[in-house]
Length: 343
Image (cartoon, rainbow, N blue to C red; front, side, top):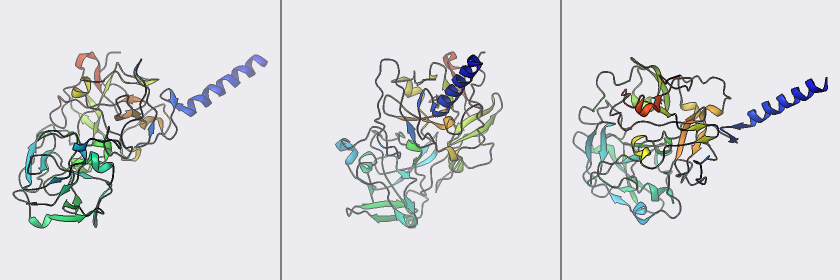
């Protein structure tokens, strides 16, 4: 009798422990957009230095460099064609302009102040001229608390990203799940959108937009039916999401660091409510969408504690060029499992 009773108590204790923890750590509140402590790679210290949890930009704290604090003038705006996002709005220097989901367009209002503005320098309305095909009435001016006259496009305040070091860079796209490149008409840049003047650069046939939703309206994570792989998870831009077999979910660790991230960019945090079609099995309601604080300071979305990535070799929505690379990278099914991986 005592043996059975002790076994029952032990089982209950294990169940309680599993309820309180996920990913091999005490997760606290793990809903999307809220983070748990990182489990660093072996021998590397954990770091809670992801910049600003609200998506202001990884690596920019109160000591952000001077380059991040510089305000830039808009000048002659232009619409640049990109394979990833269609037409993107740029300033007179060819730098990508971004908009912030936490701002508002009606009335125009900025939620990016102080340290945030070091990571996301304000674009002033000085000398602003609309790109070809965009009505000048789309351009406006927002007077910030410090008196700076910030450019707005269709009411949305415009910014650059301090980590974009060269014309054409798009490193700010999707940061924190709140920052997005602007289309020439002020909307979010997206494949196939006209962007206020010309035909957008879409993915053509098989671009992965079978869901019927415009890319700008697609959830942060959703499911697409691929003709070869079946149902797979894609990000907001329709890009295929991958898992790395050398990562670990318990405890949660990443094996993709340094140059690996140039080929396999991390998926930025996604709010749990900003997902569609994902049906995880055998996990609690929170565990499926834990935000991973990486040892390099970036924040990364996970599914069932597995870090998620996209592939730089996927040139347009719907591409699956990362499938099976090195025998270690695989697309992810709606239940969080690897697609097509060897048993």
